[in-house]
Amino acid sequence: MTHKIQLNPIGPMSLLSQYEVDHLKQSTTNELYLLVRNCCLAVLNSGAEMDDFEQMFSAYSSFDIEILQRERGIKVGLINPPEIAFVDGKLIKGVHEHLFAVIRDIVHMAAKYANNGFSQTTEPAQITHIVFDILRNAEVIKPDIEPNMVICWGGHSIGDTEYQYTKEVGYQLGLREMNICTGCGPGAMKGPMKGATIGHAKQRYTQGRYLGITEPGIIAAEPPNAIVNELVIMPDIEKRLEAFVRLSHAIVVFPGGAGTAEELLYLLGIMLHEKNREQCLPIILTGPKQSEAYFESIHAFVGATLGEEAQSLYTIIVGDPAKVARTLKAQQKKVKQYRLDTGDSYHYNWSLKIDPEFQQPFAPTHANVASLNLHYDQPKPALAAALRRAFSVIVAGNVKAEGIQEIRQHGLYKINGDPKIMALLDTLLKSFVEQQRMKLPGSEYRPCYEVVR
Image 1: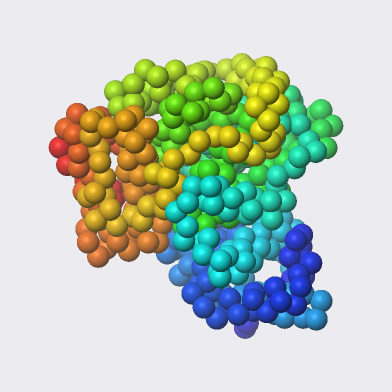
Image 2: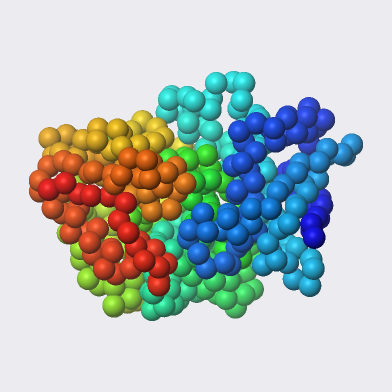
């Protein structure tokens, strides 16, 4: 029996011109349709413990989505949606909101940029504008509140001890009226938000924000968790990362796997730029005592590849959630004063210099992997950008549809470069595998790469 429901729009999608509605309707007949359908299915599966997009999609092969044109705007029709998204026959409100975030960011923004050439631009200033425009359209840039957004990065595949620690850090941040932004999935992306909700509730803080930023290629493996009350889908990982750092007033990095290493290398690479040396952006790497060896290995890898200057950009705090929160709270006024002194926005860091190698989308193909310059004879930011791309490829091969398909057609990615860097990379990746940081606990991990030594 076919199950159909219709949903009224929420947020910005409830106020559309007839011209915009026509564009949305047309978009459902082109290549965007499958992307929208899959992202909506991922949102509807929030709470399901899996990171295999094929397993999820095959279980709901009869699921479909329709954009229905009405005189006063649009409705969205769902055909055979997953039962997990419903309570007593009614769609969960948070899921309802997230569905229209998908429509807003993928379909609406694609229609907006379809004819102006911006979607394929390589101009850094234009890319930064696109990131800003998507965030502004999602109404997540809020100039009337304190600059208190803490970006939390970390793995979706972490053990219970590490997960509980991320909750405690979030709780301590919430008690100090700091807001949370993560990649919106499970594990270290959910824990800080969950903890912050309790801290905010105890302080009667009514402006609690739990912002999730994701991308189409990763959303199936990391569906938005239920705590997220603001969701943004960026077009690709590069714009997602830029959104994180430009929105941030502080960054916390929890234990994780290849994706977390990618995020950290991106951050260090841009902060190493000479024009960013005066930037005020606190960065803390933290986890429970049991994760101390993890941070030692990450710190050693950064030192051996990018040097002491890169290591000096962050502070490692192990086993002390309250200290993490106190440190960031103490830095909050300095961040605000720096923005005031430089004339920059409190809520979108325009002055942060991000070079093109950190902005241009990197397709996870074997040819692109072979072209990576993983050698020491280049500036440290350039090496960081190349290392970031190497980890990005591994993430794609682990969970993204395009990467998995590439592996099936052409075999394992072969990562090649300076023998010393390859030895360091191989050691770090093997530690991730041994600690089960590449897949959800209990899942068998089969490497999608080979480090050529």
